[in-house]
Length: 472
Image 1 (cartoon, rainbow, N blue to C red):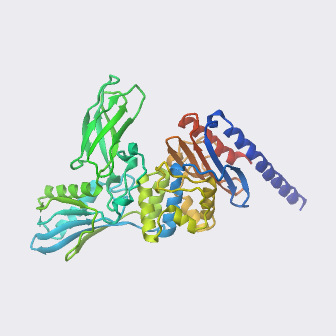
Image 2: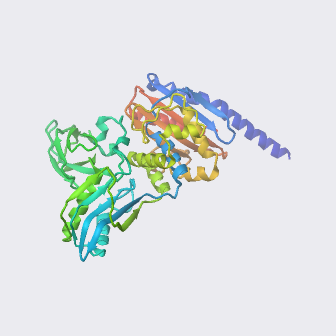
Image 3: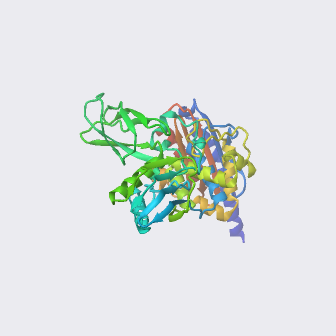
């Protein structure tokens, strides 16, 4: 009995010591000159006891960058369910007589962001081959109409209006459509040279993007400069230019761009693949954001996405903006919410100063507080089953996702589950820490405009997260 009391006292003293030491240790990190010019918000909460362990400007609204994806994926999993699957339908609209479809082949988009995605097992060739087989199995050798991509499920009005123009033409700026394919991206390949400042020509665009024209203003950069090329152009804009630099070399160098019109891209490639096997389409390929009226509809195929939990895992661990936009828009449509803020306000989250203008965190006019983030993390944790499923979607420090290279040699490795965020001038982290004493800690860190490089800020914030874990 005495031994038990002594052990309990020692544990109690250890916890109190940790609680008293943690603020000073965090303060010391944040007093670094790196943060002298920065706006910083930090909140740390012991979810086991409900005790606030640290707060710094918890009510200051700052850009969340991609940590906003926590809000989006948690909402989507609650509204749609972790087993939810998107679907894309292939239909024959019209009448089939003998081997002729008197009508159209219609691809009806269901908002699936994973169709022919690099992040999952299928690819564009597999999807097209599967659909061509389904069309042939239906006995169709001739189509009097067109191959139509129906992207009407999501209005173009929902394209995030405040995403930076510099981002829109690049793969991470791909917008969500009612019909997505191939991660809504294409590849642009350059011929390298060794002379710094020399213009670089385009070697290839693949897969083929119908009617796309790209002008290169790219030049050769210094050795080790990496990819500094940006494709300029927005949704539905088929004339684009690319500027910046690529590293010197004797081979080729590839960057990724966003598709101007994913539906047009998909209908074109399906039509081309049909022609390859001598199935004629008299009307060509079409993409539309208006609903296509179907006549004598014959459903040829339904393509299902992976589960929402799998999609949310890629969204959080790989920080895929397209996936976040798709999950957020779909959840709001089916749950009849206007946006992220209206959903979380309904869950009792304090949103003073909060602005959410997209679902991915790419909009630079987003603003949240660490207080609001901690409240959402607490809400997720309040249900054990929900917490277990959601936590599995987050990257793990030193092990997986965007955090795999962070703190690999630290004792904190494998004990921090979080989402990172990075846009121009902003670095953020939010998530959970599993402490050795069994307590779960929720934390949120927002920084804007520090005076040091993004690389240095990353190291210092990694030290901060490590301190949260080790201070015991």
